[in-house]
Length: 114
Image (cartoon, one colour):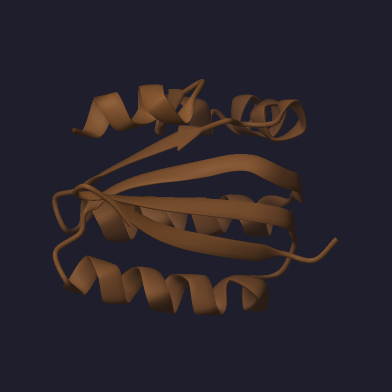
């Protein structure tokens, strides 16, 4: 399964839904460009929904860190939600779970940012 994404705005939030397998940097170029557009428009509250992610390697983690950094540099916040077990284990092993805000559901993530 290839990588895809969708960005929706809801209230003052950006809901970024990632799907598939994220294993190389080129897969995320369009995502990062579109995210930069929204950040430049002043949208700096981001929920990353990982519900449909199948696999992510260190490159995928780097994309998450890049998003986190870009949002934080604009005084924003990022919340990860609906993290599949495989990806959650990766976050735990790398200790990135202590850097990101993590919520179980999309609704819980929205409450953190609103």
